[in-house]
Image (cartoon, rainbow, N blue to C red; front, side, top):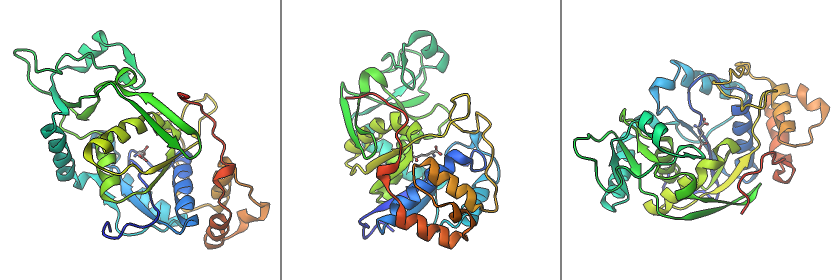
Length: 301
Ligand code: GLU
């Protein structure tokens, strides 16, 4: 799939922690329409990287639900659970370049010691120059240089993050041996030749870390578009943790219409009565990113 790069290659990358909910449908619809509108490919990647958080059967259930809603993906589904060798190889490249270090710190030690960053504690540097005597390595961390990363989001414009003071040395491989989302997503977006990432803005804070890794692994940075995130009435992002309701598994064009409206598209009332084929034909033809609302502001430059 990676030999002749498409002009546009997008993807949807659900984590099988449970069935799809409205928030995941937004990311699926947004990434699908953006790819198809531009005559591009749309790949599906199952981010089954974290077995303790996964629900048995959820990956298959997600695929069946996507099919029932009329999504058509290109090529075989990739499973991150089968990609450990590629993640390990990337980790070794970074290690050879002196860009990672072993870390012995426990979560509790960091909680007590470290100031808060935007995504957990800011690593205080304890193991950066070697493990303290008598301590065994647990995790592997990326050594972050004082560095400001800027990205140009298609919806939000320029976003920047001072990686060392806002995020710090982040984890690439956890103490339980599992690879981190940040490493896996960068390796796979690169290996699959993804040119355009369209996903929820809950991942916006992660993007500078991913760009940093891409730069250090010699990978091309895709274009990004971060969609507004659906929240519940309490303002919390819809997710398994906030008990988001599963979407009906048998496909529902009315719900697809609601998703389009959430994404700011102008949807004719009678589209809800269309069959999935007609719905997608209409939606692809009328997809207009200029209408998408950006409802969260983050780190203006
Ligand atoms: N697996 C992530 C999620 O379900 C999405 C990752 C991505 O799109 O980069 O939230």
